[in-house]
Image (tube, rainbow, N blue to C red; front, side, top):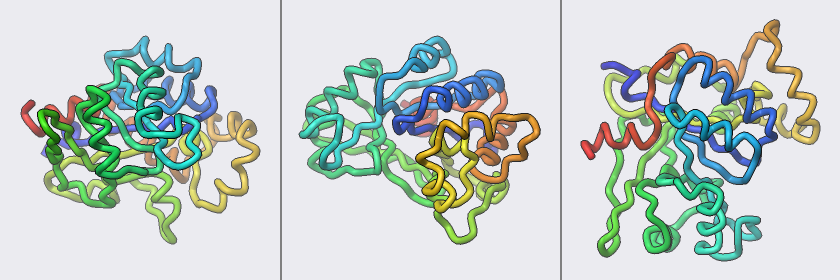
Length: 242
């Protein structure tokens, strides 16, 4: 099995500081690794992402939860996010806050083709499923690993090899730019330091720093996928023959 064709990298922007976005973008460009970014908000780095359309796919990361800054109804939330990324064909709900009713509105109000909000921990064999409503189809694509879930475990595993022990299937890794830059290793570390994020613009980026958390697996994936990989939409097309 050629894992380079079945492993994909996605990132949830989650209102990350622009310096964190740029750090991750520059690393991906250096290694020529493709990735899908689920966007929450306008920022200067969006133009940089669009400059590298050969590498990056932009989707939306709508927040459907109560008191969302994206809007008070699902339709308002979707309209807000699609205004930021009008070219989006994919989405992942922020916090995975979703329902069948919201999915119907997604199909009614947008031309999005796939939703990546289904988290199936450590289950890389899961394949996309077709959701149909009237004459619309929305692909439901699961992902199997996420940095903030890993560092919430009592014994997180920060070696890529630990997570690629399967013979077949689709493995989508999901990261958050801030956790890559902070090299987050535990939930306690993040909770304690989240109010001092600016300091981390100088912590995890030095050549002398040896990553031991989220950044460690991200760096491993850069090496693993150097010059290849797939965006989420490309991977979906490959496994569904669309």
